[in-house]
Amino acid sequence: MENVSEDEGYHQHQPNRLGEMAYHNMKERLIRGAFSPGDKLTIRAVSEMLDVSTTPARDAINRLVIDGALIYSGPKTVIVPHLRLSDLQEITQMRLALEGLAAALSVKAASEATIDELEQLQAKIDAALDEKRYFDTLWHNKEFHFAIYRLSGMPYLLQVIETLWLRVGASFNGLYPEFSETRYGARNHRNAIEALVEKDADAARAAIESDIRDGFRQMKKMSADRDQRNLSRR
Amino acid sequence: MENVSEDEGYHQHQPNRLGEMAYHNMKERLIRGAFSPGDKLTIRAVSEMLDVSTTPARDAINRLVIDGALIYSGPKTVIVPHLRLSDLQEITQMRLALEGLAAALSVKAASEATIDELEQLQAKIDAALDEKRYFDTLWHNKEFHFAIYRLSGMPYLLQVIETLWLRVGASFNGLYPEFSETRYGARNHRNAIEALVEKDADAARAAIESDIRDGFRQMKKMSADRDQRNLSRR
DNA sequence: TTCACATTTTTGTTGCAACAAAAAAACACG
DNA sequence: CGTGTTTTTTTGTTGCAACAAAAATGTGAA
Image 1 (cartoon, rainbow over the protein chains, first blue to last red):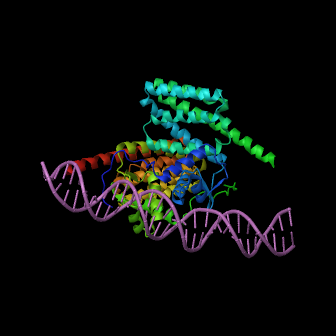
Image 2 (spheres, rainbow over the protein chains, first blue to last red):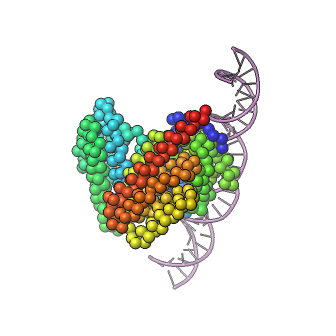
Image 3 (cartoon, protein in one colour):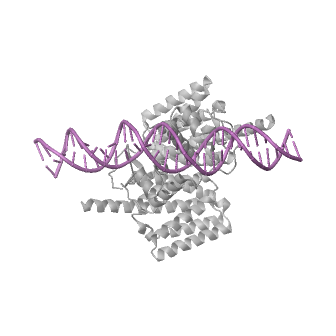
């Protein structure tokens, strides 16, 4: 337990470790909708799926459970959780607080280059929407948001926000790629870019908050629709 | 990968697992100041310390790294991080957003019983302060805050807030138990209780935010003092 | 001393097997 | 057909050893 000097800038996890790889791989699959809520995940199944031994597979599952992307449904059973309305509400409240903060802080660091980047991202979103490539829409939308949040210069804040997106994405993206169809976000994104140009922290926060709220309404509606369908299917 | 029904209310980790025990044990030691920033922690050392095999010890360390309570200083070296000013600022910003939210939400659920509980907690804080039992002060202060936040009914929010406290506590509590000496929090706590009585969400948020800001100033000052001492000691 | 290099020791990762406990399947009975 | 009950299978946890890589230590020259 010696005292060791702190090597600046070496805080992150090593991406070359097998367990880390397994975690990111599973995370990606979760976001892409490879699993449905209720699916059971076992160490040995993940181990075979990714062709690694049980130890990295176990590491990945454990970490996903910590994130809340997987939950225990029994002492030896982890499943993809079915997001309840109360969960969605909690996540939305936290997103409003945290992403609002990140957006407000981002204006300080906004440069012309970042504005350009955001406009290109928005163009990609629009194009994907026109061509009904909904997965791409979702992906570019995430890039747009995090391009802004990254300007805040707060790495841990980003990590927590990313986890919140993971939890929502795992339950919604796979089921509803057409989620983004309504283009609810276009106006909000324009406002966000404008706020960065003007370096107006309050406006940036307002634009992002509005985007989150619109998304929440959309998801709540889809959730209700699905419950309705599930009910009538029986 | 079968679809399994979701057993309501079985989401938490099992507390009887060895790895979970190791995690909580190490977390407690970290908060109590058993280690100093820069201390190196190895799997085998933790394994012996807690008298378990390497697997649960590894689990505990991994999770603490995810929390940010430990960091890698090299590919095979995890240490207790030395909290830099920028870290403290980031954590404080997140605390303001998240604990402010929790406080604002708490007023809905505030009852006479919870008011009583808070007043008893505050009495304990005052008593511990009078008798210079600084560890107890810190402990009861944490209980006071989380008694409020728990009223929000948002479990994941609580978990994230707790992690933020862990990161700060690990770097400060052990070194500065006399931190609380200035009684900076008493007025803020009174205001918070008052806000709960009145069910005034904005006032509750303001009281907690003020408490966090006062604490931040105090910590910043202590941090500067320490750096000063370290400098002149060489 | 200080720095570079070589050697030794320590360390995390990975894979695996044993075991108890949980989940699933099979069964029996109404 | 459902519904408890028993049997079988599956599963997570734990401990451990091998290995490569990193850290610590030692060495020697300037």
